[in-house]
Image 1 (cartoon, rainbow, N blue to C red):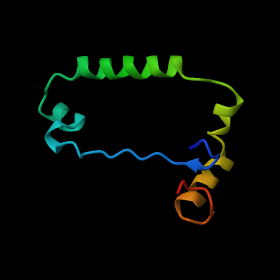
Image 2 (tube, rainbow, N blue to C red):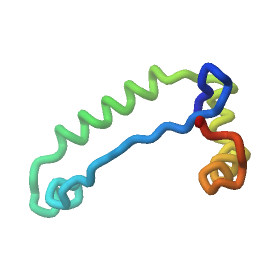
Image 3 (tube, helix red, strand yellow):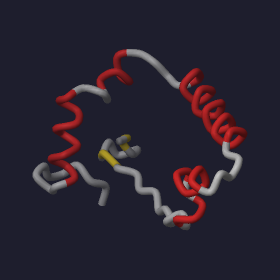
Image 4 (cartoon, rainbow, N blue to C red):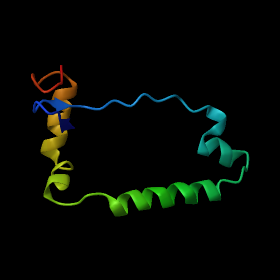
Length: 85
């Protein structure tokens, strides 16, 4: 979560479409489609993203139990004043 210019905390939303079941990795493997190149490409992209990702105390804080509990409370509307209006 990030703050906006007024200091309000904003959560981001990503709209996603469901992948057709026939194109899922498990289905492709079952019908013996070649998937090695695609899996390697995804692995390389993920590794590159992680290699260039910011590090430090502020980032580590996002992985703490306290952060996750706060996120749970926000998502379930148990904390007020944390959503952008």
